[in-house]
Length: 309
Image (cartoon, rainbow, N blue to C red; front, side, top):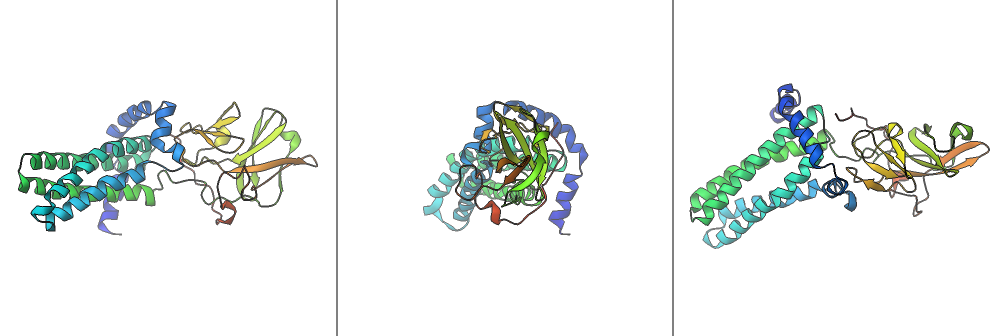
């Protein structure tokens, strides 16, 4: 195991960080609770988490500023200053969206995320100081602070990558699920009364069934956001709300009504045939097909995690 990997593993097990992480997370959850705020910061309306693409702006701007400071010479100084400024400005919405995503984490992810945010704040402080020094004409000091900020930012970027690619924070939990392509019986129709819901197995995938106005609807039972059990959620107005973080999906098409989910819930066609409820993956291009090409993805068991507190 490499030294960076060992260091992050120690952070994951540093329960002392919980004394800070838990109260800060509670405050963050209250701040992002309103539906408009939650949808905006989560990227719900664009179909993709908002924080990852925003990180490209300060990282790219500050990296290019460092390159110009190192080899650009006097003619490149205005461009370097502009890039530092752009990075400082872009870091603010990036941090806010990151706080939104972090508020849904627990345990190891929350501890690493707290350190990630702290290191990011240190990098932003260094670049703000670098910008102030540049404005005052202290070019050497400004460059030195910028290079220090670049090094700190690299550490933060590593932690962010660990959260996404190793811990799977904010990764679509239904990405590799595949339901049956042919009509498949999953439950006796008599076992699903009007207004009730049940979960059932459909060719190795758990599906959530709900009957309303005589029609049976079927969604993947695993929340796309963090893997919450939708079968334990709340049901009203043709929607289901995840019990973990409050993501709300329409039964009609799997569309998102409220974040933090940013990926629509896989939606299946359902019918009653010979007293049995049958489901299948909608043919490509149909209205109920909430996720394109899902039938061609490899199968994987649903990912689960502990609920938020």
